[in-house]
Length: 119
Image (cartoon, rainbow, N blue to C red; front, side, top):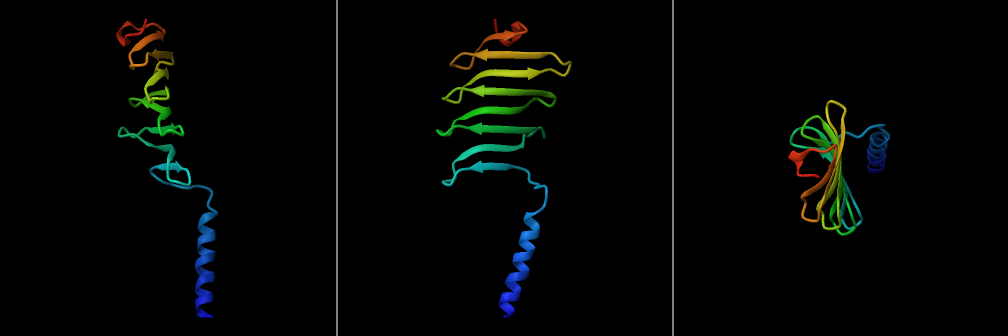
């Protein structure tokens, strides 16, 4: 009987803990039943948030986060995990896009920025 009472108290405590409206952690990792990573939400070494999405082959295909400390961006990778496109918004509000070839070299960007290697 004492064991049953103890189990009921612990069970009730666990249920109360699961009904919170927020979960706090430094990193969240979404995995399938086999433990394969499909998404990761955390912070970078600069302290900015970052979300990565992996495909079924285990390649990182999408990154949403910041370039440096204050430039939000979205990076798209091909099936090999090579960056193929970046979308960014600079601190002054100007948006930019860069496309990369299969080796990761910038081949086109807008607005045009000769320093980035785009055309």
